[in-house]
Structures are given as structure tokens and as C-alpha cells.
Amino acid sequence: MISILIRRTLSLAITLLVVSLLIFTVMDLLPGDPAAIMLGTSASPETLAALQKQLGLDQPLPVRYLAWLAGVFRGDLGQSYTYGVPVAGLIGERLAVTLPLALIAIFLSVTIAIPLGVQAARKHNGVFDFAAGLFSYVSIAVPAFWVGLLLIILFSTMLGWMPAGGFPGWDAGLLAGLKALLLPAVALALPQAGVLTRVARAAVLEVMNEDFVRTARAKGLSEGVAIWRHAVPNALVPVFTMLGLQFTFLIAGAVLVENVFNLPGLGRLAYQALSQRDIIVMQDVVLFFSALVILMNFLVDLAYLVVDPRLRANAQ
Amino acid sequence: MRKTLRRPVLLIGFVITLALFAVALLSLVWTPFPPTKMNIVHKLKAPLDFGLLGTDQFGRDVASMLMVGAWNSLSTSILAVLLGASVGTAVGVVVAMRRGWLELVVMRGCDIIFAVPPILSAMMLGAFIGSGRFTAIIAIGVFMVPVFARLSLGAALQVWTRDYVTAAVSMGRPKAKITLVHVLPNISNQIIVQITIQLGLAILTEAGLSFLGLGMPPPTPTWGRMLADAQTFLGQAPWLALMPGLAIALAVLGLNMLGDGLRDLLDPRDNS
Image 1 (tube, rainbow over the protein chains, first blue to last red):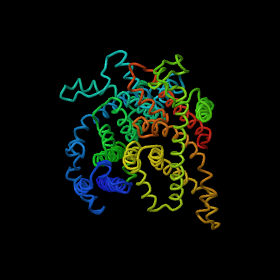
Image 2 (tube, rainbow over the protein chains, first blue to last red; image 1 turned 135 degrees about the horizontal axis):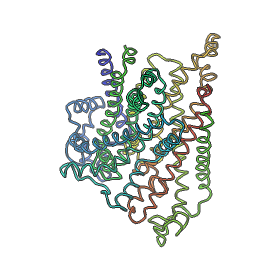
Image 3 (cartoon, rainbow over the protein chains, first blue to last red; image 1 turned 90 degrees about the horizontal axis):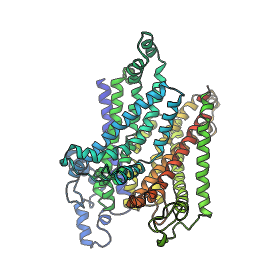
Image 4 (tube, each protein chain N blue to C red; image 1 turned 180 degrees about the horizontal axis):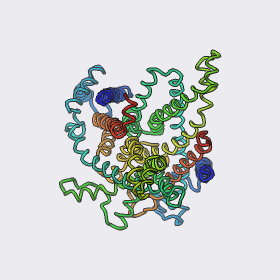
């Protein structure tokens, strides 16, 4: 197990390094001088030269990359051009919105999907199965940001129960914060729930007829106990794999949903950085998101090994 | 049994997709009103008050904008998916032919590309080369490459183990020729199914990009920007936010159903 762990961690480190190199190089290869892009057309040559020097653009690419990477390791992601503060602090601040948002969305999607998928598998080819299938088809097809708009129309404009957007900050209290995140989280969770319901249904269907579930039934356990205690835990592996794979889409969804609800999260930061041409912030946020996706997949891989001894044997 | 039960999926998917293509193509020659023509006198009219689906804040006909939006969304998505499918499949079959370290490098590469959501790569691209259809196509297409590379690699590796391929190898046929004559035709069904499903995803992504203003520039109507514009008038004219979203959902639903139906129809594993 330890040797696998070391190997996987090594591979993770290499992947992260390549990602950082890739993002840095792509940003560098793209036409246009970042300093000129940040300053716009009206900048004087002196200002331009000064910013180029400040950003280290007068150095060759490898030197700049290593300097940036060394900074990342020290937790120094550079200085935001528009906010005039360190990017690391900015990301940390915004993460306090995006992270809870993503976690609530994941929690919601799993709590919707697993009972729905399990029940659909139990009532295989029945009316419930059909309804669950319809639910997943529709929820996968609707864009999360549109669901967000519909939720605002219904719960804010028409009923007036929820805020239409914005975030009061965690200082305003846990409840106020959670209330602001609830609608966005629902919008974000719905498409995920559709995908996960499908996976959960297929996984339970597959295990339901395995020997150990038949044994559980044969020793007199009720159908419900046999399914929930014996079949479902074994069916969770594909569900969590899918959750890991869907993480990219969760992040993409968060960028959009944060913009719909005016939430000061990381996605909105990236968007604002784009409109303000704050290249450094964008580069760092993209790296952060990508690293998060890779890390998530790494954790899912590891969880696999912990959960399923057979995979441990294969990986040796 | 299961196959016959799921045939309605194929049928419904086919009908919706056909309707989508028909509307998109029709918009090239006819729309009820010129889609970009402003008519302030008739602004923010409810559906049926003016035109079939009402008007937006500039008095533009929503139904006409939706029709043109269908073409814009579909054409961008098709180009993006074709880009991803052709590059990805080429990479996949070449790797299946060569194997070895190339396989490892390419698969890791796929992981890496997949880690950057197209919304973010479109933002990076947009900052430098400007937003627009080209940026959207590249961002979505590049994200699709790993999907097709993985799929075609897996499928091609299976074909390489078949007896007829072994026979061809033992007859001294060059590997490139075997790939063209035996591998590609045998994996084409799976690629076609995947193209259909990815097309749905591309439409969703394109809508997201347009919503953020990273898609085609105004005044070209896109479903995503129609939703972004509608956001300002949620209280006043909520129907403006309804129709473009429904159009996106219906298009994606149709393509996903068509893809699932085609998979059931074409996948030989299901015949057993």
C-alpha cells in the first residue's frame, strides 16, 4: 500500500508540474503582451516598460516560469494588478464562498441521487424507474445557470423567500451565509444529481444479483436491509468515481452560477479578472482550479484503493 | 426486451434533434422578423402580444432570435466537436498502434487537458485573442480531445486483439494500413455515438460561454446571451428567461436521447 501511495503521489506531483508549465506556456505563447493587455491602449511606453519590468517580462521564459513556480511553493502567487493585493489572499478570501458552495452542492446531489438511483434499481423497469430516468435526462440537459435564473424568479421575485443574489459574508452569521448559498447550490447540484442517479441505479442493478446480496436475502434479512446494507455500499464506488470525474463540470458550473447570483467566489474572481485584464489573477485561478480537479481525481483513486482490496492487489 | 423498451428514447431523440436542425437551417432563409431589428415601441411585450414569443428590451422578436440562436449554437458546437473528435480519434488510434511510453504520455496529457474546464480556457484565450466564435470553438474542441482520444484508444486496442487483425499483421501489412482499413471502420460506431452525446455537452458549454459574454459578439443572437440579457428583467419580463433556457434544455435532451438510443442500436455488446 505504501509503495502504491508513493508512486501515485509522485505521479500527482509530475502531473501538477506539467499543468503549471502548460498554463504558463500557453499564456506566454498566446499573442499579445500581458503588460500591454493590462494597461490598455492609452498607456505610455514608460508605464508599459515599468509594468513589464515589474511583471518580470524582460526575463526569458524558463526564468519567469521558475520564479512563478517558486512563488507558488512559498504561497506567493504574485500581486493582483487591479486589486493591488497578493493573489493568494484574494483566492483564500473567495474560496470561503466557492468551497462551501461546492460542498453543499455535492452533498445535495448525493442525497438526491443515491435514494433515487437505489429505488429506481429496486423497481427496475417500473414506473418509479421511468420517472427517475426522466429526472436524470432532464436534469442533465438543463444548464445550471438557467436553473439559477428560474430559482431566482420563483423564490425571490415571485415568493420573496430568498435573496436574489449577493453574499452577506460569514460575519453576518452562519445562517445568513448558508441562506445566500442555498439557491446557487441547488442550481449547481441538479445536473450533478442527474448524472449520479444514473450511475447509482446502474451500480445497484449490477450488485443486486451478486452472491453476497443473495446470501443476505437467504439468511432472512429484509429486502431493504439487504439492499441498503449490502448492495448500496458496494455500489458507492462508481458513484464516487463519477463524483470525482464530474468535478471539472462542477467548477465550470460554479463559475456560471456565481455570476448569476453575484456571489463573490473564485469563479466570479476569474470572470472579473478577465474583464479587468488581470492576467496574473487569471493564471493563478486557472492553475488553482486545475490543481483542485487533479487533486480530486487523485483522492478518488486513493479512496478506491482503501475501499476495494482487489484494486490494491492489482496495483501492486 | 430492453432494446425494444428503449427504442422510444431513440425516436424521441431523433425527432427533437431533427426539429432543432430544421429550425436552425430554416433561420438561414426565413425568420418571422429580422432577428436584430430593434423596435423600441414594442419592447418587452409578452408572448403572443407581439410575435409568437414576445419581444426583448429592444423590441426584437424573441422567436426570431431563438431561431438564429439555434443555428449559432449548433454550428459552433458542431465545429468544436468535429475538432475534438478528429484530433482525439487520430491521437487514439495512433497510440493504439504504437503503445509503449507514448500511451502513458498521451493518457497523462488527457488527464491534464481534462483538468481545465472549457470555461476557464475560453477565459484565458479570450484575454489574449479576444472572445468570439473562434475562441469558443477552440476552447470546447480542445476539451473534447481527451474524451475521443480515450474512447478511440480503448476501442482500437480491442480491435487490435481480433483474429482478422492478427491475420493482417502476420501477412505483413503495415500497421498504418491496418489502422485505416480495419481499426477505424470498426470503431466508427462508437465515435459517432460519442459525437452525438458530446454535441449536447458542447451546446451547454457554448451557452455558458455566451452567457458570460465569451461567445459570439452582439448583436448576433445566441441562447446564452439572451439569458444573460434576460437577467436584468427577471421581475419585469420573466418569460425572457424562460424560452432560451428551454431551447437549450430541449436541444441537449434531444441529442442525449439520440446518443443513448444510437448506442443501444449500434453497440454490439448490447446484442448479446
